[in-house]
Image 1 (tube, rainbow, N blue to C red):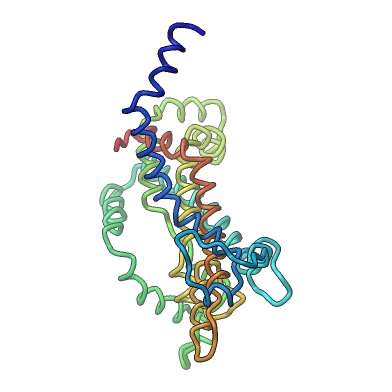
Image 2 (image 1 turned 30 degrees about the vertical axis):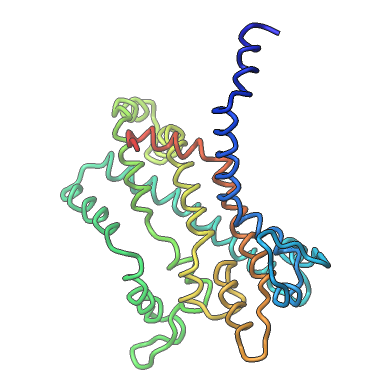
Length: 307
């Protein structure tokens, strides 16, 4: 054993080193406790969970895998698989939409010269200062009064695009202002000579945008994709306020609906199932962040924004 390795080995048994690691272990356990509780609670039946005084680390007397089976593969009398599928479809759609619109809008503000460009961009940035909750009622009216949809016409009112997939496809995604800002910042660092050289070589606008400039922005686009995917996956407001059909629910909204059904007189709330569904929301988000966090750092670094 070399002298350096011996010294490192001796340092590992110094009191300060051990105390530091015990403290970190304790803090890590506290931070992970909600996740540990969720896993343990998933093994309970509905009856045992509500009739037992739970310890800090609850262990069921009759553990079951039914909640996890229902989350992963679904069952004939459950809609969990459908909620999961809706969440996946909506997340993928919104992520692709955010990537496309953020890049194109960022390109317009970074590369094209037109009157009022800076003013329009500042107005877009200013909209980020408006709390999202203030937009719930105007957005609801916008969906409900959508022209010629859901029975809407000049004479009688209808439901517009409420309670339909159009809420997710048309109303759900919007221009990602922060993504547009990041792409604009990054593209402004790319020399205009690249555009001029590409055009002299015969490249059209489409090829210039998607074959030359887009690959240069991959870290930014990865950042936009990750943050959009996480935000959409955890979004509760859109499916809860603008849809009522069970066929349109996603996992976050479904949890609330299952809770409200179980709260009716005489019913027993299925807490283990609700907690397992919450785990189904949490774990994919954690995995996305864990595997792609380097792109978040890299994406921000490319824009010149420092924390």
